Amino acid sequence: MIKIICVGKIKEKYLNEAIKEYLKRLSKYTKINIIEVPDENYDIIKILEKERDNILKHISEKDYIITMEIEGNIISSTQFANKLNNIFIHNSDICFIIGGSYGLHNDIKELSNYKLSFSKMTFTHQMFRVMLLEQIYRAYKINNNESYHK
Image 1 (cartoon, rainbow, N blue to C red):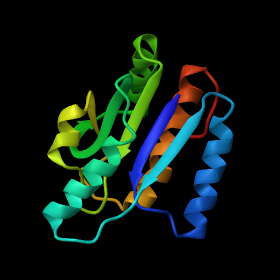
Image 2: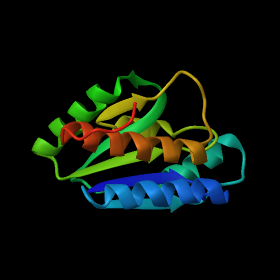
Image 3: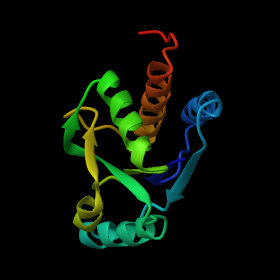
């Protein structure tokens, strides 16, 4: 099973439609649980602490944790597919964590088994959720030797 913990809700209809589409496509391969924790509105330190606490409520000891971090490893889609395949050999659950506007609290980063970045660029967490789902879908297509557009 794959769990995606995200800070914030998706308000844009077009992004919700894209998320639904990728969840539908992925249902052929795996169960995905998206957990939204609230965006907080304090000073930066309090925001990160509150978001940390909200994220920690949804992490299990058996989760292989992949944090989405701008400082993380940048890998190709094929390498990502291989990474997921290798993780699932030893773990039944993968938990991706997407931070909010200020990223992730250091406590969450320290729990991470793998730090992943899609780019040195910054993306909105709403847009990034769609990008992550697309890459997970692409990974399943690659791992099952199924064609998918490039």
